[in-house]
Length: 245
Image 1: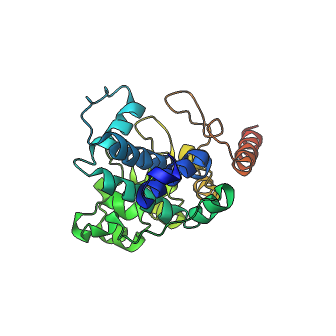
Image 2: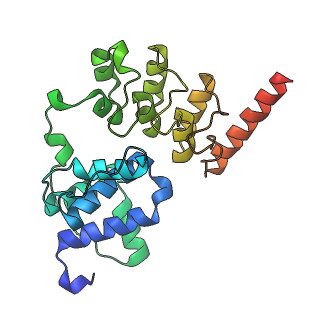
């Protein structure tokens, strides 16, 4: 895309996609999934593809996040993409300007997420927004182990968001610290793959088991990239081995 044939809004979206593509390691897996949905909606329009089979969970999750956008226009999808990135990384445009010489364009729009009335938000939404008071008010024991359309329980989302207070609340309320998602991943897998040290330490303090494997036979250490995360997990593994001997 050249600067001469694009309007400011399209250019901003293009720069946002470039930034996300180059910084995937700093973004949570669930956020990357949402970016994927907005991108597909902006480029290809509403989803008309058939749903992948339940055994192909990763492909199905991608399909779901795109399909759930319904008839959202390409313009709204581009704006939602940029607004989500702005919420997660407020300084991303300054970084892009420094590295590419790109002139930042300002687009003033109200985030689409804010249009939803509170009554339409689910417990999963409140966890994503780190809204512990609302979660305390509405959650019932039967909600704790429920999986959403992405195969994730509340504690997985709390870990994905590095929401330590919510993790502690959920466990005290009866959630398993080793809760499995649809791919058999535990909260420790999420903390490790997302690079969330605070959530990782919280889960270990709550006696999460770092030796459990997901459906692909990988432990939380196997999915970790962050050096500090790997160090913490190796030390925990050594501690457990010493305690067992």
